[in-house]
Image (cartoon, rainbow, N blue to C red; front, side, top):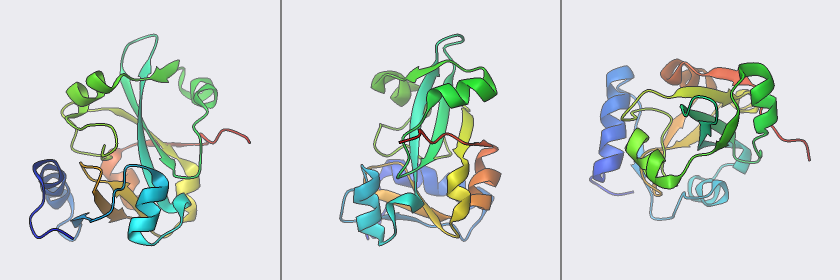
Length: 162
């Protein structure tokens, strides 16, 4: 763990500290860019990784943040049935502009602009989950309840059937 946080991770830490002073962003030696990398780095199951995926609504151009369990692929058709959002993967430069963070380290909070957020209901099965915290090396330990409180997201079944 680094002694001083990088600028992006520090930005997330400052946001989280306003909400709950016990939340701590950690920067790790190993990458957390993928759910498997993150799970290996923190010593948890891939399912406990809360991966942040940013989509763009084809109807409104609004960005939608989907925070999914690391083992799940997101079924955008399921999301559309519930929310009416017709989602496509957002382009990296747009994600960076609207969130302030690069893909691979997008946190659930602290974005440059507020994002509509969908939470994978499968994350509720775990006492502890881990989310990206601003860089591909930074994470924060959360509970599903805290994730919901922080984001105001909507819990949905987003899992693509295998």
